[in-house]
Length: 532
Image (cartoon, rainbow, N blue to C red; front, side):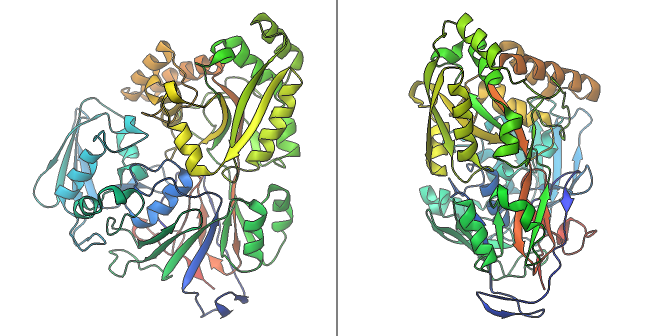
């Protein structure tokens, strides 16, 4: 399993005894042919450039690889498909030397032309890259011989090397992409270099990957990995306890405490950089008024919902950026205070003494207790006169709604979470609050726009001095917090439950799971999962 995280992750070795599973009697030497993982949502797309969701990116990471990676225990970039690189003195030119002998799943070689194709493709308007701001600094890509690539930037970008480690920058086979055409989004056959290859996607049911017999790194243990789409958290847990799956993401929050004591399973958990919020469409009706948006924050008792609905599997947000990220600034200790009285005062000042009605969308199975806490929020909003009508839908439809432009959007208010794959506030703030993040160019459904915030975020992306960059990020967080485009809720904790035989699973604060053959093994050996 592919993606490295950054410092702050929790590493758990899942030690095991004997169990009997769906594959027949399982012992220390008996390995099931197929590893089965229950996830809460279906994919939107499987193109690494176009997918929009951390869970799906984690699946894509089995098949596709980037030039560089992030080490799980050190704050440093490590080799992946590139073995080394150089950065020019002016910070504008990056030269990468590629790993030799690597082939894509379709048998074509990894070379400089493939890298050039992959990176230039990210700028193609026909490719629906939701995070296009990541590739904006790239001015040109040059293939220098077979195994050398030169990337020229149009401006100094301190985050660029880290950005290259994100799934969107995965290197793809030009032959496979061109052969597949429009089918590439749902069937990326032959396109990656990773330890597993695409085999089948049954929409709403499962995604099946098969082992790459010619993988350049450590050979994976299982012949296949099956990701089952199971929106109901209780059903995911039942499947783990019955041995039908070997790992389940986010089983029911009320059961986590008991699962920690259950000898048949292991709960692997860690803090997360996932910020959970309610985005308000700042260009719609009442939400055009900052006083209304501030009132919404006063009206919701985040601590009470965390305790009663999420069983304290989260920490109340006190900033637009989570604490574990570079540049984090605590804007208000304890977050927005709960004050229905103040909420009513602000609503009256804005002309909504009798409240208003709003459509409130939420997913089911994407975040911890998402539909349940959305209902709790709606109940608290009714206490100040805001009538929020809660609606849910499947995840691919939800993503499609988020990516709809302002003139056609249905969004008035919706639940969303944002977990950036690099522990840097840049991706959280730029990806949600810069005016270029408005759908369909980005994934910022609040349609928030503030020229001062745009200026601050543009400046920090080009600022090489660490302290000056922190100061820019600090001011941006303060302005955004007071403009209140979101109801700030919490940073959720992150956990999976596995059968006791699965060994070596790691949980990352960027909400991905992976595994190392040995805890101290270097980057090349991190695709192994052991079975005991």
